[in-house]
Image 1: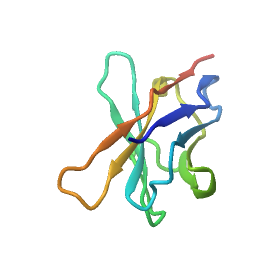
Image 2: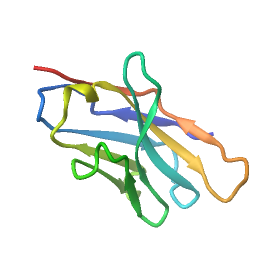
Image 3: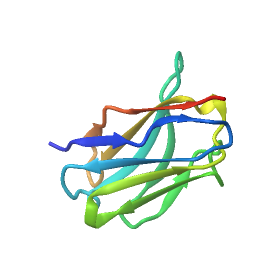
Image 4: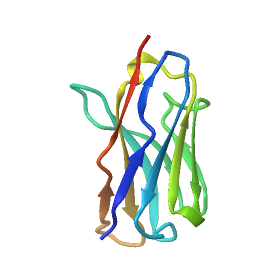
Length: 119
């Protein structure tokens, strides 16, 4: 089993910044892709960013150039730096670990952290 614990959410003004953290219960980064997702009220959960086992990163078009995903292997932690936040990005942000090297990948999720962008 793998536990993911997100933190760092809160209330921020439009145009502001936040950094989310996701602490993983054990080092799995060689065997799992790490993702951030978000879910706004009344909407489906959407993928935001990915960091792979070899540190490649990918982003949803809506956040490119403003969000940065990174990882600290020594601390088993994945980060999401979010800049120039918009009100429509108010959502619960979730950390996800997706298993590699299998046709039936396990997925682990954190409990989420609320981000509210409002003046």
